[in-house]
Length: 202
Image (cartoon, rainbow, N blue to C red; front, side, top):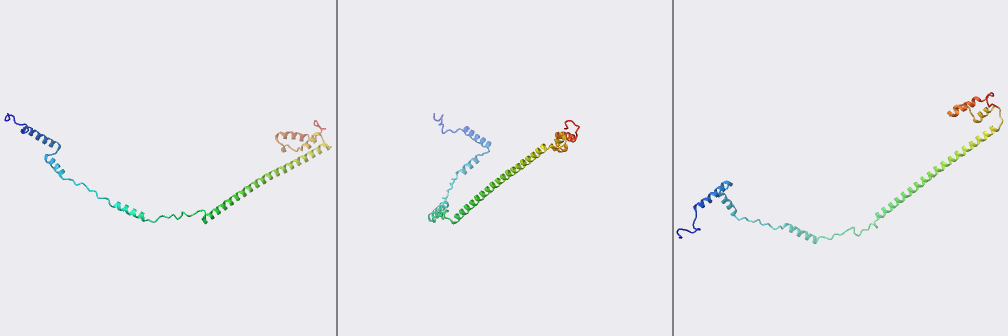
């Protein structure tokens, strides 16, 4: 039986081998890759790749060490203005005195200006009332004088008619010295003056 049916592992089918070979060739032609190309690519990756070894960064460490050494041996910083008192400074005291003097002078000048303004205003007010009172007294005196003269003329017997006395009392001369309404009455009285035959002439 063994001669008629050989073992499966030992049997190599020529048909299967031809089929696989044809598939490889077709795939190689389709993607433009040959068998030799695949082998060459495999050969390229066969060589061991050496990893890049980073060198230790020594320069920054050395700089840090130098800075630490400088810091350790650096001299202490002294604040020169620590003990300086601005209150005791001569220049500051002089500035304060001059500033205070300037402020005092300004306040004094403002006070003088205010006093002068008040005095001028009071003087102007006094002058106004003085002129007003003077004019008032003059007007009152003139009115009294005219009143006395009128009474004297009225009581004094005079010649002429009533119209003559009226013209004299009213001091009528012509219509030019009066307004439009009074002008006609003045012209009428003036026209009756000196006429004895007019009505009311006594």
